[in-house]
Each structure stands twice: as structure tokens, then as C-alpha cells.
Image (cartoon, rainbow, N blue to C red):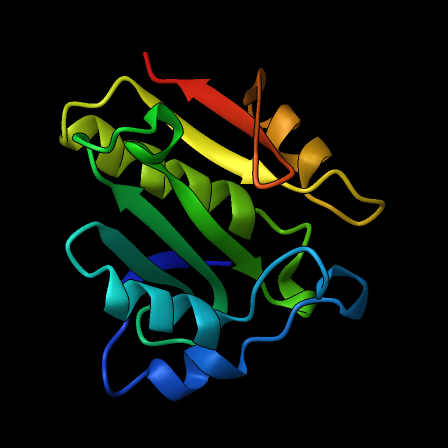
Length: 152
């Protein structure tokens, strides 16, 4: 795959909303359309991006970072709000690419860590995030584990 990061635009928003994950994952991550509505409502802090296969190619993933350094909750100052990888593209580096893109943007903004919340569930993303170097902070928010990745 030739992975690229792209902003969400009027030309690709429908493709973004059609992105479908594996059925067993539907209970642990919100659909892209819900994430885009949240991004619209939180446009000052949300950073939604598509992952495409090639320049203008098919949408294979969606990631939404959040950059709100003044947030009173440390876990919400710099993090990954959402990560969706198309069912047929899972296991091909799309998720890793998306997480790296958020980490790169965080560094560019002068941040030293990225957080993410995940549900501990049979088909949840915990093992994925742990493999990428995230570590649980010991905190839980909304019944989800808070993980952090130190940026060096």
C-alpha cells in the first residue's frame, strides 16, 4: 500500500462515511460519520484525517486527533479520539500509519505525549495500542483505559 494522509473534503466525505470496519469491532469504535459530526462540533481542537491508498486513492482508514493543550483533563490535551481501519485493510499497516501521523502532528505542535482511550473488550484495540508503545496510565475515563505514548 502507498499510504497517504488527506484532509476530509466535500469530495471525499461520502467515501469516508462509507468506511466499514469488521462487524465484531462495531461496538468498540464509533462510525466515521459520528466522528465527523463531533469534529464539526469541536472544530477548534479536532484533527480528522483520512488514510488513502495512494494520492486520491480509496479510503482505507480514518483517524481523528485532538489538540487542546489547555484542557483541564490531561488525557484530552493531545490524543487520538478515533481510529477506524477498513475491514479489508486491517493488518496492513494502516493503523500504525495513522497513529504515527497523529504523533508527528503532536511533535510539530510541541507536545511530548499522545493519549488514547480504549475499551477493554474481546475485539477491542488494546493489544494494537500496546504493540505501538502506548502504556496504560492507571486512569480510566468513561469506563475506558487511558493510554499514553511518550514522544521522544
